[in-house]
Amino acid sequence: MRSKDKEKKSNRRLLIKRIALAVISRILFWPFFLINRSYHVILFGISSRRTCNGFTLYSIENNQIFFANAIAALNKLKEIDLRKYERARYLVPIIAHVRQGGNFYKQSAKAFYVDEVPDDILYFASEIVHEATHAYLLRKGFRYYKEVRERHERICVKEQLSFIIKSIKAQSNVTELQKQIYMQQWKEWFQEHLTSEWWHNKNIRRSRFLAIKKLLKELFS
Ligand SMILES: [Zn+2]
Image 1 (cartoon, rainbow, N blue to C red):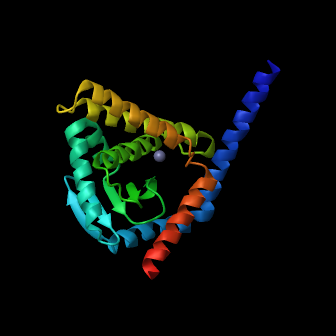
Image 2: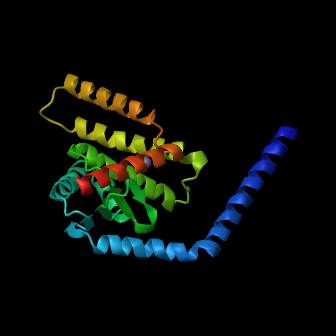
Image 3: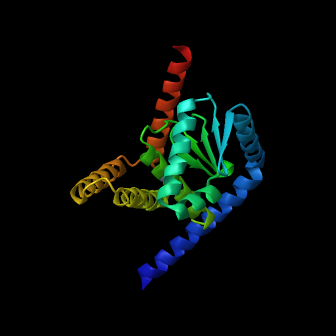
């Protein structure tokens, strides 16, 4: 009984702390929110732009491979799962190759920020599903707090994998045995991928640092 009371108290304290932090950050940092918004406007303004059935694509370096792969991935998504495609169009209408260090969903821009352009079209399409799931969870009020990041990522990866499995099952020129092999390979790949725990702050910092290093190398080579 006492431990339950303790738990309740600590949950309440955590909730109060979060509300206070949210209020304080809104009051103190509102100029930064404005800067953040202006930053996206500038970033998209200086990028090349294409449209594709209600999606807007941007590339800061006018990367034609990005445009081609993004359009192919959107077509793949539409062909395999129309419901997921419509959901992505509503939740993540912008796909922007803006080299911000890592591929992730940027809530304030309602965009999927792409750093590395996936070569594999099916995987690119599954990444759109992944980021749309992040957008969906955030829209439903599930914030991406440190303590729940892993849960968010596992839900997004599950959606991503279910899309890939659906796509494999829809293939008509592949035997059942081959389909089973592909599905098992993808399952194992995602299992392995999750062990990298990319959602931890130290790993985010590390991947951003490596992305900046790569970008600088490209700029000065
Ligand atoms: Zn994610």
